[in-house]
Length: 87
Image (spheres, rainbow, N blue to C red):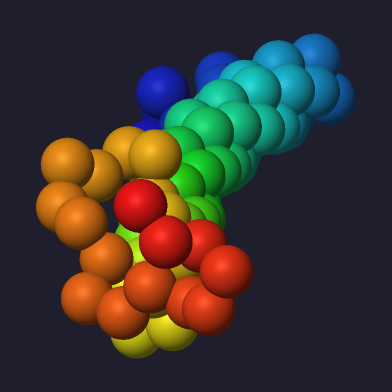
C-alpha cells in the first residue's frame, strides 16, 4: 500500500512516461501489422496477375491454334492454313 502511494505521489511524471510507452508500443504493433498485411496483399495481387497472364496467354494460344495462325513460340504446324498462306 505504501508503495502504491509513493507511485501515485509522482503520478503526473509517471503517467506521462507510461502513456508515452503505451503509445510507442501501440504504434509499433500497428506498423508491424501493417507491414505484414501489405506483404500478404502484395503476394495475393501478384498471384492474381500471374493467373490473369496465364488465362490471357491461353486464350491467345487457343485462338491462334484454332484459326490456323502461325505461333512463332511453337514448333507445331497450324492445323488449318488460311487461304493464301500456303507453305
